[in-house]
Length: 148
Image (cartoon, rainbow, N blue to C red):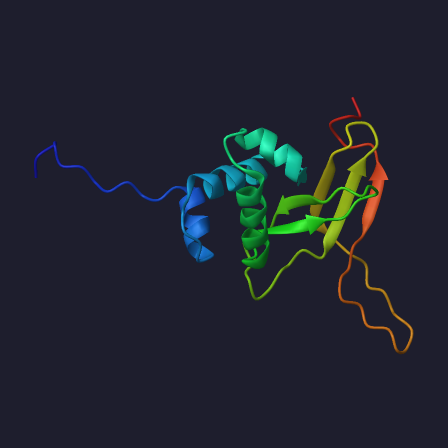
């Protein structure tokens, strides 16, 4: 075998993630996914738009976010503001099953909202006649990066 033969390049992490969730690869989808997986905290639509550049129109961005949420790539993060934030889901999430029942932490110094995936939302016993559809749990304080 000659040294000039090349092996096929294995798909990168972004490509694998999009394919696993049944989504076509587009430059916008790759950029949004890279922005969300590259940060350790949830981003607003405006912050994502700033991360990926102004070449993308808002409609395309929000359609991408909606399809990512429907396919289990991202989840909405509720914090103490009226601003919607998005964070990357765990690798186990899919369109059929989200595993985003974890605690979120809002830092009062940097205003970042972190997913604390290793901290489960405590069990809550609801009174009869009540049925929860979502479980959001937000703690606030100072994050590890702002402690210094």
